[in-house]
Each structure stands twice: as C-alpha cells, then as structure tokens.
Amino acid sequence: MNDLLPSSSKLWSETEKRVKAVFEGYGYDEIRTPIVEHTDLFARGIGQVTDIVEKEMYSFVDHLNGDSLTLRPENTAAIARAVVEHNLIYSGPKKLWYYGPMFRHERPQRGRYRQFNQFGIEAFGFDGPEIEAEQLFLISRIWKVLGFDLLSMPRLEINCLGSRQERESYKSNLVDYFSGYFNDLDSDSKRRLKSNPLRILDSKNPNLGDMIMESPKMSSFLGANSKLHMDGLCELLDDFGLSYKINLNMVRGLDYYNLTVFEWKHDSLGSQSTICGGGRYDGLVEMIGGKPTPAFGFAIGMERLIDIIKQQDNLETSSVLDLYVVHLGEKSKKKSIVFAEEIRNSGLQVKVDVSNSNIKTQMKRAGASGAAFVAIFGDSELELGCVTVRPLSLDLNDNKLLQKSVPLETVAEFLLDSVKNIERNKCEKI
Image 1 (cartoon, rainbow, N blue to C red):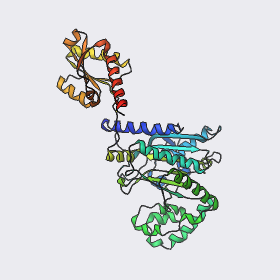
Image 2 (cartoon, helix red, strand yellow; image 1 turned 120 degrees about the vertical axis):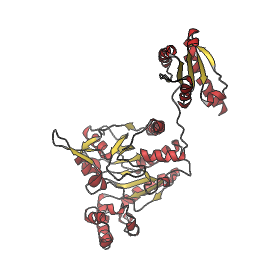
Image 3 (cartoon, rainbow, N blue to C red; image 1 turned 60 degrees about the vertical axis):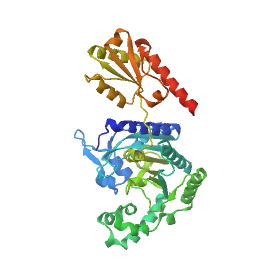
Image 4 (spheres, helix red, strand yellow; image 1 turned 135 degrees about the vertical axis):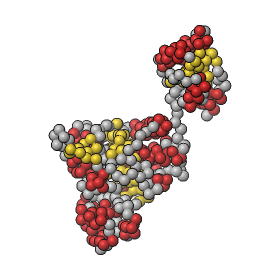
C-alpha cells in the first residue's frame, strides 16, 4: 500500500476531475458503496475458482456477530448488490459511475498495490450492443482528455464469450484439449482443469503460451444470437472509426462475464499492460438475488493510468492558488492572516506563509507554490494602508503586469481584474 504525497496529488486531482467530467457528460450518475461487504457476495459473484477469491481477498470474521467480511477486491458485485437492495432499476435502466479504493493481496508489481484505486462504470437494464459501444467511445474520449495522442493511445481488444450454454459446451471441449497435455500443465492449471478450464486461458505462465494459443476458440461455439450481438458491436465501432482487435483468447479474470469482454492495453506497462477492462455480466444481478437484469461495465486502474500519464508528461495541472502572502515581521504576519480572510471572501484562493522564515525563504516558497501573485506585507506598507503585489506566473509577466503598491481595500478587485485581463488576452490570441 502506498501514500499519495502532495507532490503527486495535483496530477491525481486533475486526472480525477477530467475523468469525472467525461462520465457526467455521458449522463452517468455517481454511486458510492462501503469498502466492506459480506464475503459471500464476492464468492458468488466473482467465482470461487478465481485468483481473487482463492488467494487475494482480505477477509476477516466480525468478532461481534461472526459474519465473514471482506474488503472489496472490485466494485461491480458491490454495486449490483446495491442495485438489488435499493431496487434502483424499478423506474428504468440506470447508468452509474464510481471511484474509490479496492483491496487485493497479490504480489506487488509495477502499477499495482494491495490498496489500489479504480474508476468504473456499471450500466443496468441495457441488453444491446449500443451500451457497449457507448462505453467504449466514452473510454476513448477519456484517453483524449488526458492528453493521449494517436501514437500513445491505448489499444482496444475485444472478444465474445457467448451465452452460458455456449460457454459450458466450450468448457467441455477445453477439458478434453488440455487433458491431452495434463503433464505439461502447472499446478494451478491442473486444479482448474475440472473446476473452471477458462481460467487456464488467463494463465500468465509463459510455458503455457503456445498450448493456449493453439487451444479451441470460443468463436467456434457461438450461436447465431451471440454472433449477431458481436457483429452489431463491431459495426458500431467501425462506423465511429474506433480501432480494435479481436482477441479470441481473452476471457477476463471474473466468472460473471458473458458475451462481450474487452481490455485496453498500453505497451509502456510491460507484461501488466491492461489499464482498463470490462464486459457484459447479464447473470450477476440474478445471481445475488435480484431479477434477471442485463448489465455492462468496466474499471480503470488509477495507479497504472497515472504511471502512463507521468511517462508522457503532457497533462498540465493548473494551480488553483491565486495569491501567496509573505510578511516582514510579527506585526505584518498577524495582519496578513486577517487580510487573507477578506480576500477569500471574494472567492479567491489564498495561502499565507505563517512561518518565521526570512523574506528570501518565503519568496522562494511563493515562487514554488504555483500562485498567480505574491503579496508582500511590511510594516512601512501597513502604516500607509497598502501591500506590495507582484505577479508570479509567466502569463501575468507576459502581460507586463508589474509589481505595484495596492491599497488593502482594493487588492481583491485588482487581482480579479488582472486574471480577467489575462483570460481575455488568451482568447484574443486564439
């Protein structure tokens, strides 16, 4: 688990702000669920024979009532539980988004922590490929608003897992195929051969790579309706011009998926290249006690996303600080605290240096703060009822706003007018 320090928080906040704006721009509503759920929810929803349930969940017994509880390893099952519990789709389909921490006890690796954060979307009550295309378009828009260009854009891979019946037929065929190579399988794959052979296709063991590539493909077991659904999605993606690759070996790591599954990958992350994944899970709501409900969603790993953004170094983080206040002596320091409150009443963001450092050190901090202006409080200026205001940002200097003495009662007006002038000049240049 890791700390998010102030040096990184601005990039995180800017990324969060942009992603949330895209979600809301598509008409999705935010939902927040507890980080603790009953263990049985994940065992039923995710699947008993998955790495998450078998190895990675942080589970514990509530000493007050003996319940088995788990820190959520993912949020789809939890949101489906909330949909059922609160009857959220009684009035029609729902489009929901979430953001928050998840927990998995897996081997630490690049971009992966045991407490990690995910953005995600879950849409309930939509059974056609249209909702799938919309979400893939939405994700593509997220990459663009985060500064990805054509050369750095994550690549999309999709597959179709068919219906439950088609998948059972496929599983039977996989058992026959892998049984012929039983002695070559690793211990995990041998165990999964009878319980859930699809998980073998998701193996990260490089020694099984050729065997998996030559295994039977789900596409050979799809019925007419599943093929029609997949064709409908591909047609929509083609109409929009969204590039994709069909990956017949993709199964995703959770048992609740059916029909469409997808992943967005980025080469800069190495072998752990997936930064976004999801798919359709039409049986999950019924599995946890609700009425049959079609559903489709995805999750984006925040840590991996930030890793890529840092490598590209093309996402600007704008400062929200308008004014940094420094002082010369105790009298001016006390006055600056009251002055800052009056400036904040005008809607401006102000940070006051309340240390006992010398003015040189304070000015250095002001320059590193990202503030647009610095206000310098000295005893002589206070006797005149003024404060020295100096621009700090390059935009303000380009506009030839020079250091000047400003009456205390007009500082807020001066700052607001200066910012407006800068914005006006930017628009004129455009």
